Amino acid sequence: MARIVQKFGGTSVADLDRIRNVAQRVKTEFDASHEVAVVVSAMSGTTNQLVEWATTVGAVHDAREYDAIVATGEQVTVGLLAIALKNLGVDARSWLGWQVPIHTDDVHGAARIDHIDAASIDQRLSQGQVAVIAGFQGIGPDHRITTLGRGGSDTSAVALAAALKADRCDIYTDVDGVYTTDPRIAPKARKLDRITFEEMLEMASSGAKVLQTRSVAMAMRHNVNLQVRSSFTDAPGTFVVNEDSIMEQETISGIAYSPDEAKITIVGLPDRPGVAAAVFGQLADHHVNVDMIVQTASSTTKTTDISFSVGRLDNEKAVEIIEKNQDSLEFETIVADPNVSKISVVGTAMRSQPGVAKTMFETLAAKGVNIQVISTSEIKISVLIDAEYTELAVRSLHTAFGLDEG
Ligand code: ADP
Ligand code: ASP
Ligand code: MG
Picture 1 (cartoon, rainbow, N blue to C red):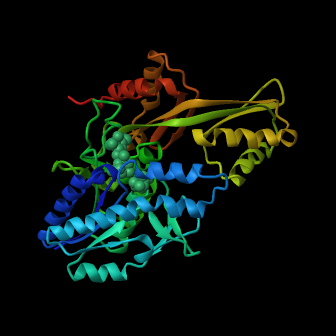
Picture 2: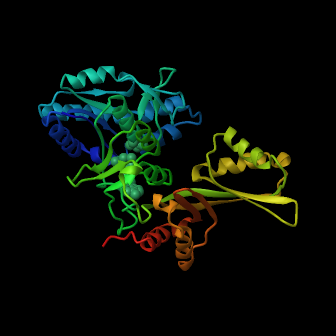
Picture 3: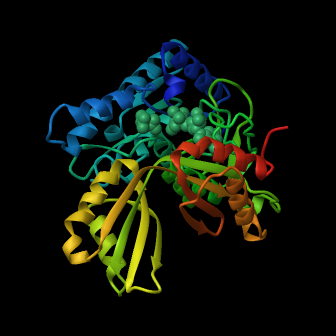
């Protein structure tokens, strides 16, 4: 007998037939005498609709009320799945975040899980009841409902798997595993049997939304046995594993893209200590997340230019903050390009293999794609390019690194 956490995403619970299909999958594990906790997302499209309502109803945008609204999609699906399970003769009950309870901090809209008091669910599981738990939500220190950020049900599932000491955490979604790149934009993408936590972390944080980044970090920390698989077929999925369980890797593992980025360049800043600290300090104080940064000092004048990227939604806010501080920062002008995308090549093989950057840059050059900003980590190289070339860049790099199917 094993204890299993199964998580079903939005497309897997998109309508009543699919919810009945999910109930069957849960029943299969239950009938094999396993203890099963199920985490579900809202029906696909629902959270988008709720976010739109919450952000357009009026001018005063209160993050606590935002959470009260956007968390409701999951309340519907837990109830429906519990009913569908009972109709199959499986004892089940629904649990909302506050009922578990899943305690979070008070950063409404992007809360972090502090701890989960899993005693009640633990007891029900051992009595043979299936727990159907709402993903994406928790309860804050102010006793208000919180949400974990978009895609947060993955993190709910992994956190519950850790708290319940589950033997497995299976993430069921609309693709049958983690691919070498998003199969939606690269038809030649290949499914990976295994990927390391570190690579998955870099892929997710570079835009591969098949798993929420925080869920991967959490699974890595708590050694959760994590698998991504399809809710529509029985094909084996992708296991996310420790690096030592994969022998020497020869190629890069994947290519990720994040199409919604903006690039901002501050031209003619004084070239002296404290300037970068002042620029990025201002942005951090206003909760603007900065990703890539390059600074180039002029050798002839005593000035420097700084380019950095932010999420497209933060572009205007970031420009406004910098412009407001033009007198103290003493720069000449600021230029923003809201239409760039970030393309990243990821793989632990990079540690031992030279030439990955060369292949990447030559491939993009051959397609006439201009690289605007470059950044690297030990196992990742990312570039910013004009968003128009996103698909072309991903597909050509996929081919250049020998990742194409067949
Ligand atoms: P869910 O609603 O089940 O959480 P998501 O839409 O959040 O599903 O994530 C699944 C989607 O992630 C896939 O449909 C796919 O388009 C996208 N995706 C992006 N990169 C990858 C990748 N490398 N491998 C698999 N899927 C990916
Ligand atoms: N329903 C939430 C969202 O759409 C959480 C999730 O699906 O993981 O972001
Ligand atoms: Mg998701």
